Image (cartoon, rainbow, N blue to C red; front, side, top):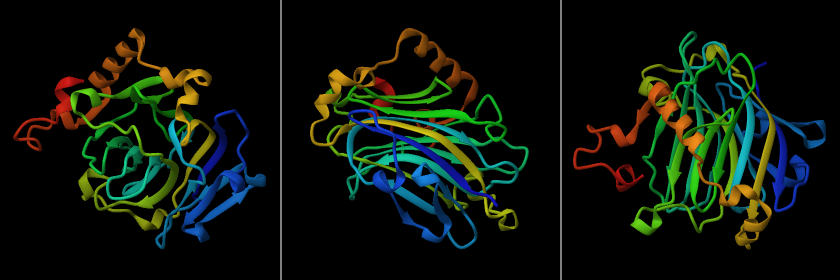
Length: 273
């Protein structure tokens, strides 16, 4: 049976071991979701009928997630597994880390996006320097007042800076929740939707463990400045160099380079960052 598996350690303000029943809830695809091991393990499955997903019960303003993931082997075309932050409403903020499946023998795509005030379209995509279906690797999102940072095994692959002072929207004020899910996205996920999900391979399996999260209270986010080092983190010089290396060797799409899409000029953050 092919399943998406999650293990949790959830930190809100002070560190505490997470229990799924206390901190999260299944929100869709209930028949395809199982909570195991007294709430420390959750399985989510995708079949022809439905995927499934859950969300955190608490909102937060700024946070960090580290997740160990082993992705679906073989033909995973059309499927997407994701972990992301999001607020609600038409003008919502959202920070996406998604894994776009592919045909057997072709690489997964790591897809990132940032929404501010309801507007996304800030996609950057990467191939990875390893086979993400062979073993667990650590994927992270950091969101603080200075930047959003995506990392893989501790290597930064993307930074989205806070340029609010220059008129560039940044997610600063809307509390978010943690969401995770697996679903069918064959209208766009693989080669722009040209390759569809092969349901003869369903249900599909990815494995997630050591889901470690630190976050700030949505009511008193400034409390984090003295208790969490990540709250004031910025890229150091070595991370800047590694970020350049990833972009040069493994980036496969950058909205800031898509001249066909932005014929009237790139978004402001592309020239200021």
